[in-house]
Length: 115
Image (cartoon, rainbow, N blue to C red; front, side):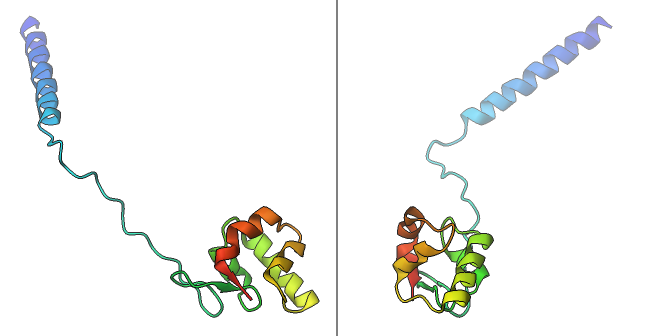
């Protein structure tokens, strides 16, 4: 029985020494693991594709939600509802009249918007 314990201790010591040795052998110049390729958002009619702007007068709620930062489906639906009720937007700044769309949200997304 004592020999079993002795061999178990020796075996576990060898295993941990091997792991330490393997970690020490990792080259310092190795590149970090890369994450999978980023999937770019693609949006149809009126939506932003590869840096293009999304039209607040033509895009659907789902397109607006995909493209605009901080705009989920509910806020996007509010934009479309406002557009249906009051007609097309005449200025991008008019978007701040939509409930739930504040000045900060508008400023954050100005680069992604067009009429």
